[in-house]
Amino acid sequence: MGQPSATGTYAGGRPSGRLVSGLDPLGAALAALLAVGLLALPLMVARPNRIAEGTPSMAWSALPCGQALMLLAVLGFAAPLLALRIPPPLRLAAGAAALLSLGLAAGWAADHLTPPGDRYARVSPDAGWWLACAAAGLAAGDGLARLRPGPGTRVAALAAVAALAGVTLRSGFWDNLSVMREYAGHADTFGREVRTHLGLALASVAAAALAGIPAAILARPVPPLRRALLAVLNGVQTIPSMALFGMLIAPLAWIGRTVPGAAEFGIAGIGPAPAFVALFAYALLPVAAATVAGLDAVPESVRDAARGVGMTGRQRLLQVELPLALPGLLTGIRIVLVQNLGLAVIAGLVGGGGLGVFVFQGISQNAGDLVLLGALPTVALAGGAAVLFDAAIAASRTAEPRP
Image (cartoon, rainbow, N blue to C red; front, side, top):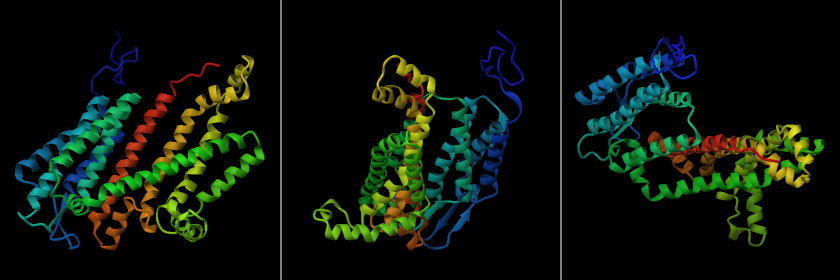
């Protein structure tokens, strides 16, 4: 076995498992953000009600003494570790420990700052908590990325995080946090709006794939048709989302009034129809462009080999070209799904439902925690979709077509 090199790996390329002296630039920046969030910014803010001005509290006043010392100890140990060049598993562990301690601190602080029996008080994480959470999450993600996990490991990590969050939410540990109090007041509609949000995003992406992939396949071999298709779809992308949603109200209302049976299918100027059509339109360009790019990337030598063994054009497309283009296709669909999960929030403005209902209600009522009730699940859904598609893309790259 070779000697450990200056970079912490043996001559054969295997990790030495030893700490390496010196600072890690990214880790040092994240450690500094952790320190700023914990020591220079308020950790929590307490309000007498959902819209009143709040009183910010630093970490040592927002928590009971024992829990404050625990938080300071964990983050005080994790931050210097992150600043060093350390093995990826240790970096992942340090970031995860910081995240876990911040999650515990939020629940403890909410219980500590909420007066007993007070149903109107609101306790929320403040700037320091959000900054420290972002830094810890980036550190944990950096450690996981440096491990280069396979598709199965990525999905397992996502499932573990989702399970931990689900158990914590069901345990009632965070019930005194303001966002959970907002959830308690909207529990009867929350599940329905989540299903509506997912339905709009998934259905629009599926429809765009069913329309965009065949259109791109047909247009790609004909340069004028290919340019025209991409130009039209690119033009749709230049329309601001709010404007497109509004422009669809009048024509869809006319269709709902005049076309027999349209109203029975839910086509109207207000409701899910304009939201679905707008999301579908925005999804077409990334799907079509990814299809064209993926097919263009197939080596000509592979096509020649497929012709040489007597494959027809259809067989080459289905058995050789599309499998080789699959990572690119999935990348396009990933982009579109994450995009549409975010854009579906605007459906709340045109009566389409979804998590945007809470976002716009919160804005109109000056209730920031109600905004978070819609925004946080949207971010979680988009992040989960990105991880799942990243795993699918990595898995698709291992498939080798055999002409």
